[in-house]
Length: 113
Image (cartoon, rainbow, N blue to C red):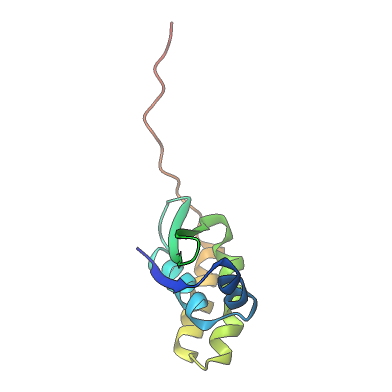
C-alpha cells in the first residue's frame, strides 16, 4: 500500500502536483522502487483523501511507464538533495532498460471442441 495524503479538495491536490510537491514524488518513486521487479501491470503508489468531496483518489503506476515516471521525478530528488535516492533511481532506470518484463500467464483456455 502506498502513502496516503489528505487535502481539502481535488484543486488543492492539483496544485501540489503542479508544484511537483516532494511528498507526491517520493510516494510515487518509492512505490515503483519497491516493485521494480514486479510482473504486475499496475501498482498502487498513492491515495489522496479529498475532504470536501469525501472521496479517495487512488493513483497507480503502469509498469510500462516506470522509466518515464522515474525520469520525470528525478529532478525533484535533485532539488531536495536526496542524492543517494537519485542514484537508486538512475540504477533502477538502467535495470528497467536492460531487463525484459516476464509476464505471468493466466490459466490456459478450455478447448471448446
